[in-house]
Length: 245
Image (tube, rainbow, N blue to C red; front, side, top):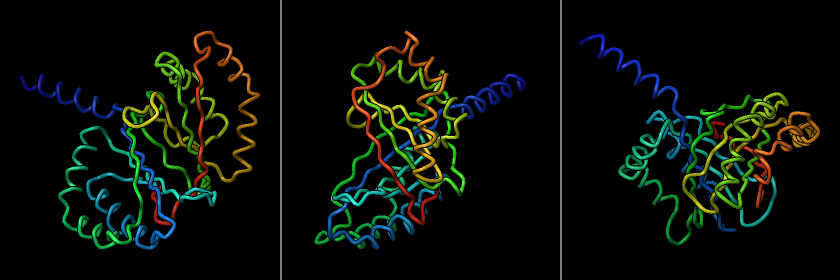
């Protein structure tokens, strides 16, 4: 009987170890008059430490390279699974210190942001866990691919899992995460993040990608015909000083 219980425990542990992470990406839209010092104070000294205390680490906070208005801040939060996400939401909502800081740093007469949008993603099977970039790769590219049908979308995800992810590694794209959106706007779509040393390296690597034999073979495969994409958007980002990515 003890052997059966031990076997069940081991199977459960392996199942938990192998599961795909869940990602949340928040996009905060700031007012032109937003107090950026208060915004940073809230995330650096309250929001991120609270999640870290729950074992949620590698939280990324980024701003756009461009000076476009309205200013946007991107917050990336990796969770071990959906249960971790749900638990974190409950704890944050009941955390009196967090709620007090939110009220003090974002008063009704001068809030630190307008609104934020949030989306949830399940990590790709080909990359079930995120990879923290090294200290040299500090230029980030966030890309989103929207599809015209569920069929096209699934085949595009397969294309990544069955060849593109490996090619990205070969060309040193600095893959951080790949996510299948499960909740949010403009679905079906996927989002992924790459990290480079500079815009110049980014352009050079993408140039090598477009001419690579592996990519030529993948895009000519009938299984992936017309799988991409009704829309592709990208944002060039740099991490804020307190970002954990």
